[in-house]
Length: 217
Image (cartoon, rainbow, N blue to C red):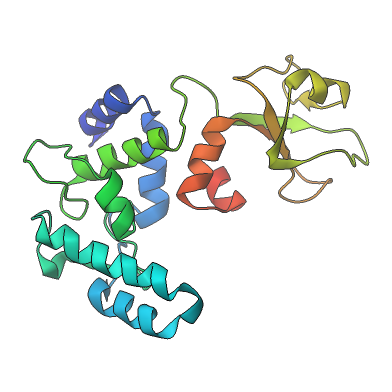
């Protein structure tokens, strides 16, 4: 309720469900309460020197952090975040910040540290660029036949008619429906809960590539 105006404005501009944007904010930083305590130039330059398999990645993130300061969005002392470089209310990596951070409060800068509207609009912009389909579902829980051993996986998408033939059913008994092909995910194995997921789930997954994360959102 406190940030309803900013959340609704972000939804209108980018077409992303404002409840999803709020959920990302909550999971990433507990609504700004836990944003990280590491100084990014120090942590990223350390990783660039000590993580040989990802040296180029962390070097580029280090340079991106400096570019954020150079273009005037943040003062150097505001570069506080996680040990791996994510920072701000919704925990953008510096390169993501340069690509997708937007000005949500109209002050001419993209400040994901001090401006909640900027952070919420930028998160909606990220999800839109990740393929979010406005007005479409992310997915829903389903029931699979006993001892199911058919196809599964987020990226192994099939037409809904095929899932119906395989005996997959919605928990509420309604016919399977949704915006195109779906993937079947079984996060706890065949005996646990099952979900059919669509492109909006993939957009959330791109924010943090873990099934548990995407389902939490």
